Image (cartoon, rainbow, N blue to C red; front, side, top):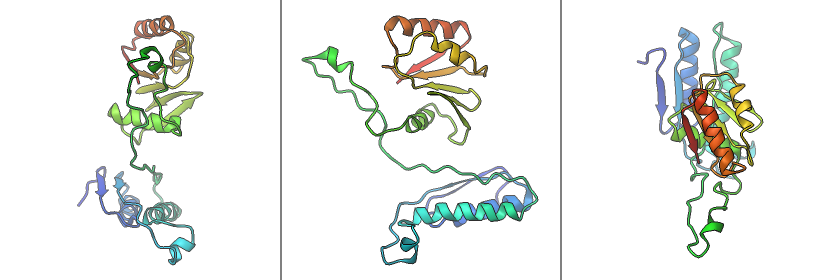
Length: 210
């Protein structure tokens, strides 16, 4: 019943049979349907064959099924298909809620806002979610500068940055309009001010800090 460019969602995906079927249908008619599979990490049980084969949850079986079925479909299809997929796990925010010490406000301002153990990639995807950016868009990394969707969004996660960072950002030569920085990533307030002005002069009007 789907058109060739729709998104198919399965809230109880199990071993991802819906993803498998979606890729097969694309292979048959040249469609570009996408899928979103949602599955709790339900344990397979230590006595099960799946567990002994290295799949402790149904979600892990689903990921392996998508990999294998995608490869098989590519091997048997004349169409140029995209069978890649991304996996996300529901978690709390990567950013700490600010709870100032009113007896030492100055020190409270210096506390790192990103939670321990969280990667730059975790932060990039949270920013994409908050900015309403499609999570399937390509992400290019240049040191700690991330270009999302060919420059639709630029995320700079460098520390101790100066106005020289503008040269690295502008070299990307993209259609960027939004740039995101870590609030504590600037070497000084004057550097932050200079970066804002330099980007504004070059047509980047949305300056966001987290």
